[in-house]
Length: 409
Image (tube, rainbow, N blue to C red; front, side, top):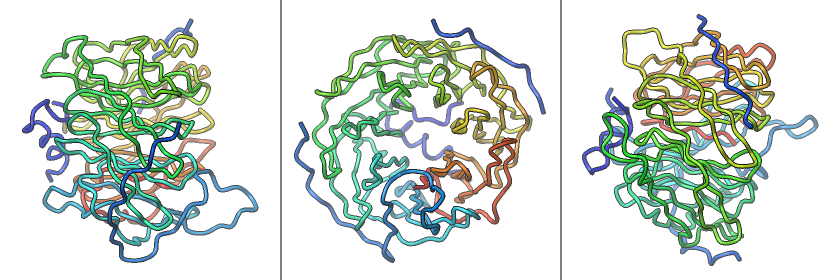
């Protein structure tokens, strides 16, 4: 059973509440692949103490001042025990220790977060039946306004590398949207909305359920992962108008329930986490056409008796290792990436030290991995060994109400 929402109001609640309630494997390979808008009206904020302001979203470099870095935390505000907005904290880039600093209030169910490439503006989904996306200026925590996504239950968003477009995925209504970003970081009126009408929903699904919307490494295409239709859609984004044109579809096996895609830094391969059938797959990507070819499913590494839902997969910047968050098994699976990205080899799993890791993220320098554990309301931090791919828990997990997203800056 998927942890995502169904296409109705009741299912939209289920997406949240399923999470809120309290070795080696075969190697699988795939063949090589053949004008700024006006700012929105500002809102209000509330916080306990001044926030750290990132100058840019980039790794720490030798010679730069060392010190605490900003961390933003997503939650649900409409569930028992949930947060009151976007949590703000800092983390020590050497030890991973997290210290809370306040909250940005006035944002409903900010369950997923992304930052502008210049590091000055934070974006959040408002995962509600009348979905929206909200912009927050990090320097003073000023809410720059919200814009409707044209769909229900938005659960993912990302910023196009140009910094001019915000991409969002409406889970409940199975659609993807595009909003322009002004020079101030504020959002303009939506320029595109596409609902996934074909193919028909997969086994056990009542409709399309868009779960992720991201840009390919080459910047030429944007890809939408849809759990409900077992499909990854490739679009060409008109970077002058903000419109979308579908150019390709890639289909998993029926009932896989694809949730999250992560590209290898080489740009020719990607890795797909399938939530419903508890697998991952290697995909070949053709930058010229945008076509994705999905390989055979392989193990998520889960071995326990609990039903497991793979959540998010990440690839290290050197392209040598991948990590998968397993909800239910409550582990992080470790993979060696081989053959220039064409193969994943399961190395084993590491306990996440929390319950239901909904989302994982690297620090900008890749030295730390953060896991947001929804049911335990904690954020676990791991030290990442760049050479071996080993993960080592960095102290006691940080308490954060219904933690569903951790974004280190």
